Length: 215
Image (cartoon, rainbow, N blue to C red):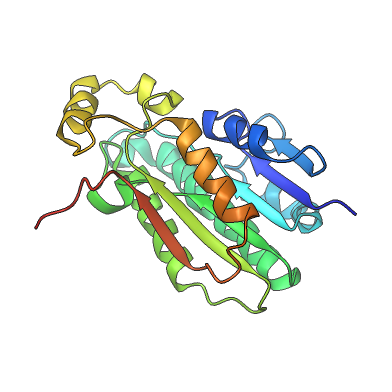
């Protein structure tokens, strides 16, 4: 039987480009927020066995734009935590415990290193990075890793950011003097997840053009 692949947040540019790279003989299930509300963890629990069908899961669903952390913003904070962290970890944990062949792929962010104008988003990405590095696998065929890109200039998040001056400054200060394209991240994800990289696991790959080099 053809390998079964699940892609969440399938409307993202990175997801769309990844799908183009995957061979046609692979079974791909695409879901987005219209199919599953990732902010409602009880709804996810009811569908937990759905996720066991898939040997490879790519998590692309996320939200950004939470206001500053304060008591007037609790609902938005909880939504961000559920979508950007809890839903992904819960699904990952269930699959790793019940599928000996589970291979889980996350998209992190440089926000997990330096923070973000959306504080909650940055904290959730940092937690994803730590989870990937520390989560001990139960079976030798399992895999878990994360790609953490710098500014992806053709992503919806980047285009919708209100602090475009900061976006331009970040790109201008990068040693490569440019931002990333979604297709570059998708190609790297494809190479790492479909080619012979069986020993690679529990790794966060930071794709930032050497932005944080200091020497």
